[in-house]
Length: 366
Image (cartoon, rainbow, N blue to C red; front, side, top):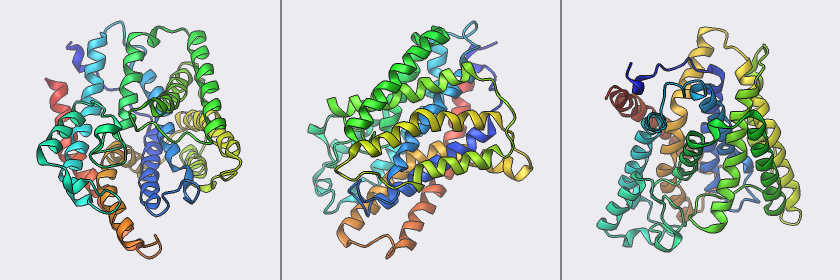
């Protein structure tokens, strides 16, 4: 059998649905964030924690999909499979960001209009190759390592986690992996208590790289450890309960402590990342979807989750610039905000259905 064509295992339907809910929450968070650029004012302040939830899911799914395949699979085959899964949408998000780049020129992004076409093309190539750029050569003004499609920053860390898993950590015993996860939890707690949150990771400099790797290590490898330790039980209505807990963690709690007591918000985020997110993944993996509608809903949410995450920001950039120039509140322009949301989901679905899926299928067959 061609090792590149290892059969795909059945998916955890509830985990797929939860991934979609987290992705949709991020889109809403980004839209609302346009009106509250200060993190101390945003009423959906913890929406960015969906990225940390993604990392927990990724670690669990990687363990499920590949832990028992290393006797018949090489590191090269694993990395190719991960590239085939992740990279087509990275390319599509980068290209969409390039197409919409000049439409974002505004008082918020004043340097956009002065960027020559050759430099934009260069940044397309850098984005496609996942080569991060430092703040000193930023062409938008927000110091993002992937200036055409900011969410690609988390894929930078995702790829690193996959490489580390394939080369070393797949061989770790449960005890060794547990020690690594415990160290990651300590690093997470230290970061949140000192900084007040886990915001960061998208700029290619020392501080953001520290934040990004801290955000990666505990969630991703905790998800992997959770898979290896799992003793699943039957949880009724798991999708409902997991969805409610996830939404409560991401959007129901305002930022705590203000600017004077950063540790309060930091403690909340540490608890969510270290305890709540693994609990949600455990519950989701333990439950079953009952009924055709619920099954189709989870599949749809899971299918669009990754495209929605990588496609939303090229559209949000334009919305951000427009809001900066008009100074509208979200209540003044909610129809426009809704339009941005619907357009994001629609564009994501079209790209997934007619480009991403056919390309990935073709790559696997090759």
